[in-house]
Length: 405
Image (cartoon, rainbow, N blue to C red; front, side, top):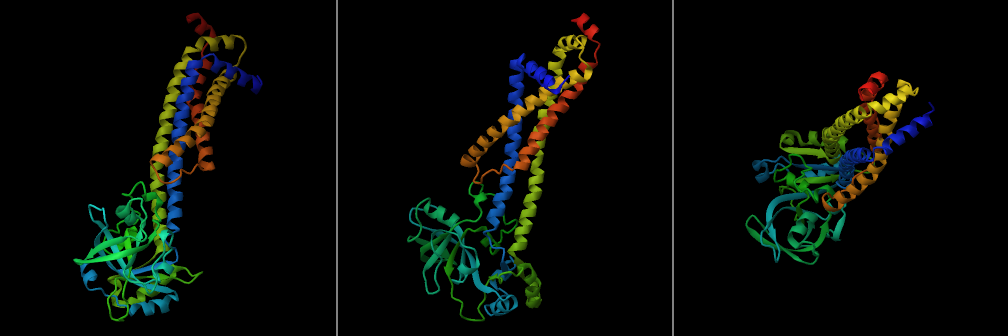
């Protein structure tokens, strides 16, 4: 029988059972749409993290004291160390001193805990800046500050922050600063899920600066012997920052155990590798969805084909071969799976837009490769779920089937 005849018979078989076909079409569509949406959300997480991490600064090296109380109180770093850091890397260096502080503004009931980073205006030329409002402070400014977006939202909600005052209390001493700028949080993925900690175990007083929940203020760095908590270094264009880690560590000598040196490029690579592993583990979710769908299709097909034994037997007595019967039954489920796949693409994109607008802060990434994989798996599952009951039905003696009917 020509392939066109198989398709025609398959189409007629589906049309003759509208309720059964519609229910199976609905179930397969929902299952495939759920699979596509899950895959798109996972791919979207990876893509958003890559975009976010590009704003952290791949050419920046962090040098800071180890996260211990002893080193925080008596830092092994001095301002003079910035000179050999500059010589070793050939880059731009900005020292900093970091402390935790409580800050509030008019109308804020509960003080906000933030990291106060006292640094120089050079910081604004080293760390990639994307400002929501205003600007970074200049070299000759005092009594001003730049807020991370997270801090600005806690203090001023959705209102404008530039030009307003923030009261800061650190070491028990109050200070009022004027906000001149708000730095955009590079981690868009955190805006709906603030519990996501992209800095891993960086929960110490010093490393909490990488949470981007800070207030940046002008600091006084004039005495070469004054202690600092660390420095950020912007490496020259075209140079690999990872290659400077070892020379910097060697230059520290005996202090290397108390001072950490790490490039953000290496940190970004580690975060992305961890995200890849997490995505692979999360892929189990859509695999389970497809397996459940396969079991469901197999059960429905088994029941549906059993009810059609008499119809199949009549076709056999009319001259249809076993292969033709199996081909028709397979074609029915393949047609149904194909139609479900087309509908699932539209449903998944709609579901993705709803998730983006209401629940997540990044766009799901509907990759062509993932859509093709999902559609292909849908067709394969439909065929696999049908082949065994179809072979059994085609192998029955048509005379015995008609006699028992």
